[in-house]
Length: 134
Image (cartoon, rainbow, N blue to C red):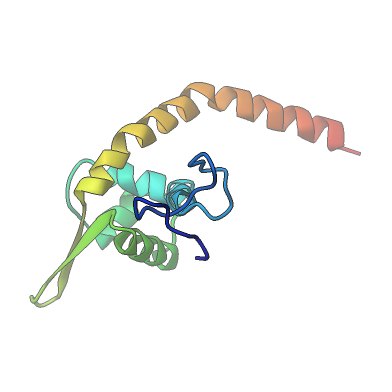
């Protein structure tokens, strides 16, 4: 990624350990949690282990391709564990890791904020449409 380690062996995040430094690996975490599908999937998995079809049904509007891509990324980032059972038909289940569960609290705060403020976003969008109309 082009970052240098500091004296303690931790990745360098600029002179003050800032997430605002371009090479800070903490930005990888922000990329993951800034994804709307990740936020919704964590919310569903917070309730326990789910199969792919259960996740797809619970997270309205997500395509199977995007769900697969998001789950793979979350697994690679250590947020989700995928368990495959040798059955016919094959059974695959997803659950949060400890790291994923630790993300549930801040994500819940963001979801609560979104729900509490959604009227403001809807109103602002309506105002913009009115001003842009011919």
